[in-house]
Length: 32
Image 1 (cartoon, rainbow, N blue to C red):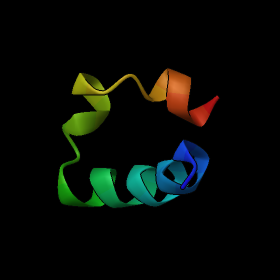
Image 2 (image 1 turned 30 degrees about the vertical axis):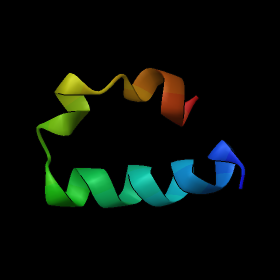
Image 3 (image 1 turned 120 degrees about the vertical axis):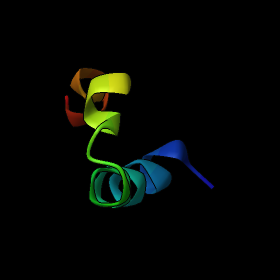
């Protein structure tokens, strides 16, 4: 299991469940 496979699913799932995570999480590293 690669982290890249979990990234796309988490990025789209996290913001929907907790919009405030975008501030706590460093999306700059994920979106990049």
